[in-house]
Amino acid sequence: MNYRCAHRWAFPKWGGPLEPMSEDLPAPAGHEVTVRITHCGMCHSDLHIQAGGFDMGGGKLSSLERSGTKLPVTMGHEIGGEVVEIGPEVKDVKVGDKVVVYPWIGCSECAVCLAGNDHMCPRAMRNLGLQAPGGYADLARVPHERYLVAIGKLEPARAATFACAGITAYGAIRKLAAPTAEDYVAVVGCGGVGMTAVALLSATSKARVVAVDPDPAKREAALSHGAVLAFDPSAPDALKTIGKACNMNIAGAVDFVGAESSSSLAVNLVRRTGQVVIVGLFGGEFRMPLPMFALKSIQISGSYVAGLNDLRELVALAQRIKLPEIPLDLRPLKQVNQALSDLAKGRVVGRVVLLP
Ligand SMILES: [Zn+2]
Ligand SMILES: [Zn+2]
Image 1 (spheres, rainbow, N blue to C red):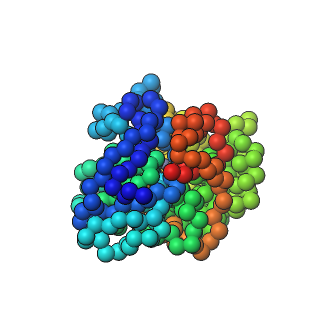
Image 2 (cartoon, protein in one colour):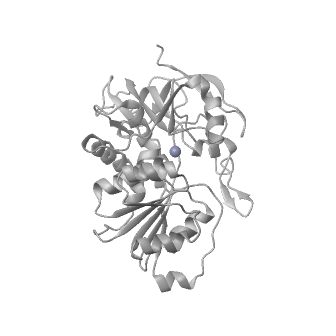
Image 3 (cartoon, protein in one colour):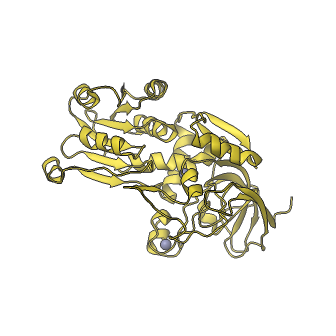
């Protein structure tokens, strides 16, 4: 295989289909690394990226174009593969290493980036799969070896999904103050990311985990991954029923949907001094009476993917504890357009992982 020519599936027009393209790569310079991609997870946010932005509520859309993303875009930010070429200054990885790539890359130079929080860099966004070419390709060029995490004996397809789905769950629950054994924590929305959060919370905290999802199969699965209670948020009086069942002691609620209904539910579920973490990017807006901030002394925060150290910790954790085996739907990369359309129509169970 020629490691100096990347074959990618990219869209040249916002909202348009992905097309095969190729680009010659120069020899890796400095700390750059070329990874031969063996697996790339498909994330729900790819649908928003392809569409060109996110629903900000009130009929408004964010625009990736206005915020500087250039066409064509090669998506794919859950990249797993093997190191095939390294720049002359690379020391910490070698050719042949099996890795997952941390894709949320910033300027790489400021204090925020150097602390491992590239995803919150105030200076620049060079995310793989958005501003820089991502994993819907056979090769990825990574600007520095520190963005690679060795996966050891982990199943490569699953480890790839840690780069977004995994660390999104991990980063969100890490925002909660350490719960006590009396505290309940609600996980609202138990798709792949929410389900991972249920399992991580059960395995790593004392909290009693409460799963909230309209789908009975997902509630069932959440109970088998460590949730002690599960509820349908669309049932009449859901708020009251859940509150009562949890002794009105829900210390934290993590919203993996990010819709108006799920976020208001999360805010209303938590007790005084409770924490709400909003993760999902479904979109819209929600209203809340301002006095409630003070009267309930609640904290509402957002969580967007997570830092490089979180990915390292999650990979280490996955070698120690059993994480839920979210079903994987492996498909050839050349079927990417079909896979995106299936994802948009809700026809995917678990996570699609593309094989270049
Ligand atoms: Zn993602
Ligand atoms: Zn930076």
